[in-house]
Length: 228
Image (cartoon, rainbow, N blue to C red; front, side):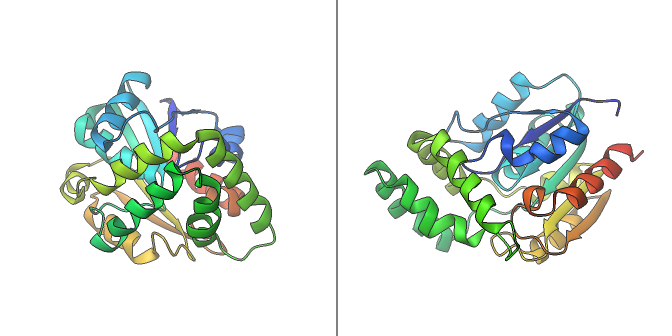
């Protein structure tokens, strides 16, 4: 691999989201909880990342990754977009953010993650319980302020369809077949917008294939890193 690899985690996650992939491929994971706009979060990534790098983002990490290539496409040598969404937030989802943030401000972060978010994430696999436990640990480690900032950033994120059309470097578009949050058709849309996209659907996985199907996800990333 000629360029350093940077991972961007999903909402309320950290480097543990990519532990199997980082063990196999190396790389670094940068946090995305320090601002309440996608634009500022991308600026933070660019300030911390190497001058040239391969970029892999999952879910909200993919949303920030798309803003990174909008701001500095020449610095990102290849892109992996996993279980994510290039579109602006829908009014339906946006309407749920306010009540969630109110609950979190009142001390209810754990209940919001347990009852309203995490159950939607995963396929029904033998490791589902352990992965849900890890997701809760990551969320509580991030804390309520990060939840608020990330929620606001997601509410007001831009549509990145034109950004994807303009990015003419190798891109892996990957998702779990059972991802209800960012479904397969959304990834087919992204692959159709990108000039150099490979679409990979991971069977037996939901929103977090890096943990649900780690070996297959790692292999797909390894192939992507070798593409010319």
